[in-house]
Each structure stands twice: as C-alpha cells, then as structure tokens.
Image 1 (cartoon, rainbow, N blue to C red):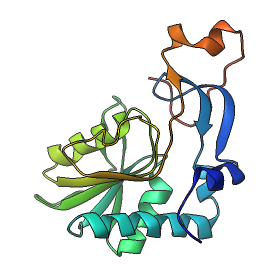
Image 2 (spheres, rainbow, N blue to C red):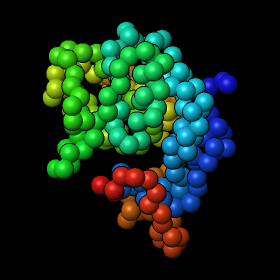
Image 3 (cartoon, one colour):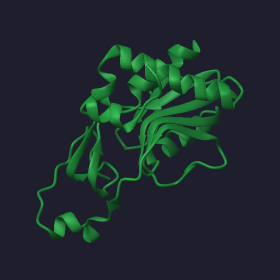
Image 4 (cartoon, rainbow, N blue to C red):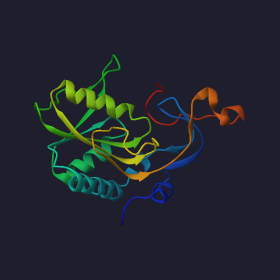
Length: 194
C-alpha cells in the first residue's frame, strides 16, 4: 500500500456527494465518513503508520497521542500504536466541555500530539488542545487523515500535517445553493450540529 488518496476514501465508501449538514453547522456537497475506511483493520493500521511517519519526520518524538472522540478514536489509537506510545482520548462532559476521559491524565510538560480524522473548522482539535493545556500537558503538533479546512495550517504556530488535502465547498446555511435549489439535506455522523 502506498499513501492515502481521495480515491482510496471514495472506494471504501468514506467519501459521499449530495447535500450535507456537517457537525460544524456548515453545509457541503461532500461528506467524509472515515470510520468506513478505518473499519478495515489493515487500512486503519496503514493510515496510522503513515501519520506516525509524518510525526517522526517533522518533530521530536511525542510521548502521548490524544484524539477527540468519536472521529479520532481509531486513527489516534493506530497512530499511537505505530509510534509505540500511549493513547488517550478526550470527550465532552455533560456541560459540553472537552475533557480527558475520566481516569486519564497527562503529566505536566508531557509532549502530546493530537490526531483527528477530518479537519473542517478545527474546533474539536482546538478544544482538545485547551483540555491538554488545562491539565498541564504540552501540545507539540496535530495530524489528521484529511484536511478540508482550506487552510494549510489551521493550528499555526503548532505544526500540522494531513495525509489528504481536499477543497470541498462549504456554505453557511443561509448561503447554501443546495438549500436554495430545494435539495434535501442529510445530517450524517455522530456529533450533534453546533
């Protein structure tokens, strides 16, 4: 297996076209559900190794991988496995605040890389970074399978890299041409719209 491409994601059913309301609240004609690609353990392992390679080639080895639930769980774990370092995840508490999963903790100054499946607005990753910093950890970089943000590094000055960069259109709901054309909208995914 070589690198990861949009064609790989399409062939696994992870890239769909239509009219979608994303978790960010934006509308788009394209939707990525990378859990479908990562459902095959061989593909998930391969993607984790690819992300680990980008980490090792671009920064000092981190001590921990943290991923936001739910999208980042599989790829975060596979990346940590390829690096042979621990993996933790962050989730929203009942008040909607992103926190480390109960029972997990980071050491003060611990070097942490955040791994996500898809970056659209980067909101979940920023919330994970806030949680890491509140707990005394040191975020040293971000990696994702796909960057659909339209920004080369939405987390500057922290280093960021994605395996696949895409330029899918997104619109605010009141500016969506698909809504104006009366095309029915879907809300796939597991996270409620913000």
